[in-house]
Length: 453
Ligand SMILES: Cc1cc2nc3c(=O)[nH]c(=O)nc-3n(C[C@H](O)[C@H](O)[C@H](O)COP(=O)(O)OP(=O)(O)OC[C@H]3O[C@@H](n4cnc5c(N)ncnc54)[C@H](O)[C@@H]3O)c2cc1C
Image (cartoon, rainbow, N blue to C red):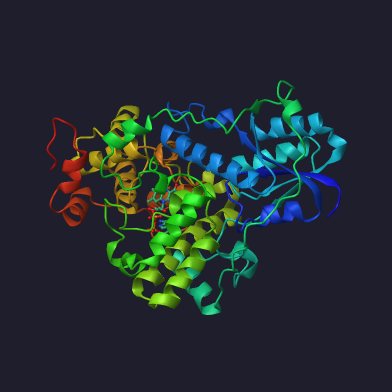
């Protein structure tokens, strides 16, 4: 072990297990200071008129940070939480520690524009930064093609991966101990804005209120079993894969309500409390014990979708964030703020859409089926700007993930790589197929509504 001081910056990897970047940070370091930055920009108002991160994800994140701090303390370290944009606060921290003593900052790589700008700002401030790619199931270097030649359609991507037999690496165990952490008490009241205790548990949504309002919620993040953080994530994985739920996954996955119709891995994957390789290892253990099935195969299939949107970012970068996406044609829509507000608030007048939007706002969760239907409605029926919808999902979803959100919205808007153009889901047909008895509409209907159109 060397004598260098490394700052390890936790981003969307709030875990100790299978954290390649953390292993890299600890490798040669004499001391490691683990840090999380609360960037006020994450709470700021968007151009669409609402806060960028809503109360559900804020609370889910706070739980994950508390869990991470506890896990670090158990290994002789602890988490320093700072308020400020990483590009400003990490250089200030390095100066406060004596910049010449800080060898480098290590963090995970995130291939999205704002996250890349954060790293560029650190470098511009004179810090040495090492980023480590780790959020995909498959290592991009193992793909049977360069990411620059990623197939335009998912099926071609999946088939190429499967015929080449590419598989994920086994997850790394959490380190038993971390290099010592330098004292940071003296930073309180200095130029560095340190957040005390165990982080800010400012939920904005009283958990008791949420529990009462959201009875029957599909992802009750205010209950200990669904709390943010690695501990709850691993317990959930163990529970989900121990039974026969994966076997029924393919048949059940288009459900709208309930705990078990889909795996519910996404919130923990999104905050990085769970690594996709860990989830895959559990899937393999399940198959070894209970046999492979259509359902277990389909979970791998969906995890590949998650990877596909990541690799799409490696391929196209910032072009995915243009108004026109990858499509050269300008967006046809004239954004109607009133129609958009009605969509957000679940008062479009279409009971199925409104039920979905109310569930989302009340619980921070929406099934994949409903996400497709409400996104399609905003774009193809209301003619609104798809970026406004993506921003609303970012604000509301507990499992908001920059790659999957952007990728799915582009896909439905017809502004990604898929040559078939956008996807319109007929909301009446969808309601008749997936909510034939109207139970979902009735559950989320406003007081004066009884479901139906
Ligand atoms: C408009 C729209 C926006 C979306 N935004 C997000 C987002 O911000 N964050 C997010 O994690 N997912 C997003 N999704 C994808 C998908 O809806 C969720 O991943 C899924 O519903 C999560 O539930 P689950 O974990 O039970 O998934 P399961 O059905 O059990 O699937 C297992 C895992 O596969 C992955 N997966 C499944 N479907 C998709 C998909 N369509 N795209 C990418 N990965 C997938 C997820 O990691 C998921 O946890 C979005 C989908 C749409 C249509």
